[in-house]
Length: 307
Image (cartoon, rainbow, N blue to C red; front, side, top):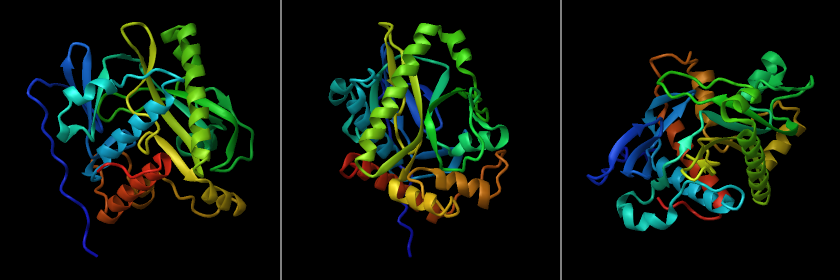
């Protein structure tokens, strides 16, 4: 079967947009002293490395899904999206993958909320019997088990190429940000996770875990920032698949609706040691990842992404 991959999307920005930073997936531009544009590329990353491949239309899906969630969650916590100004300031050719946001001071942590034992949480449990730094777990849990309660496991925010997020204690967050601010963040992200979980349960989905980034705007308000509840920042399972997996005692595969298939290929098939050179992904895997992102968007939003 012929490949359906399209050439990597190229885009140009208005001449008055000043490049600020190029991240693993998003490119940041300054529009004016108080406004940024986040343009989501089709790049894909894993284990804090940018892979040499791309997933066609991925940036559009991520941007549109983040906007969907920002709109749904704005009554729980304000966010940095400037929806009302996009029509005037974002060119139509960028509208599907760009997000206009107000500048905020991003906190130097990533706030990971876990509802189930998976990913680095599972690895930490196998190695040390706990999730993150703070949460000791009982013996006998299996990969994929639902946790007795949702857990917040903060990490540092890796900024340099090749650097990695590191687990930190909640005490570290309180020391850096102050207890009042840390308490506000804790309550907010746990409520967001609860609200999103309830929404996804209606669609037959499980929110396994997710990463939030937050910041402070010039009025001193804590706001939700970056991306939210996308397949890049979160893990999702179909509930029917999880129930089948549990019934089999955790001995069957548990299909994921996110980029876990990429992580699994790099670790299990390519046997990558997470050092240069970064492996190239098979075209079939890239196509599978694209299809998975589209499938997740449709399941969450009830419509097709505009790609």
